[in-house]
Length: 108
Image (cartoon, rainbow, N blue to C red; front, side, top):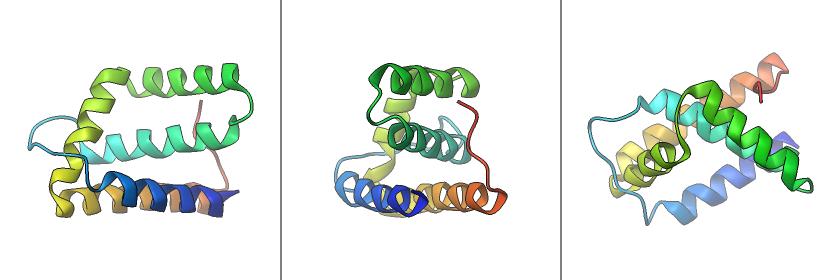
């Protein structure tokens, strides 16, 4: 299942690398990357249970203290600069790898 999540991350990276933009201020990239991975894991875990998926994604926003619109705005800013997107994606991959190493899932 984790390899599927990695594949999803790669696909999202490729598709979104053409549409995002970035700014200096805003949420820390590490926090944003953790949210990104947590949401992807929730989507993969609850892909066939929409109620649980919605609940899990909402919990991610609550846990991180960030609204959906703020999260979406921040992620949308990242891909105008390929270097910043790559840095963000590397942080997301590092977090995902740490979850695999620890054998744990995010708390949602």
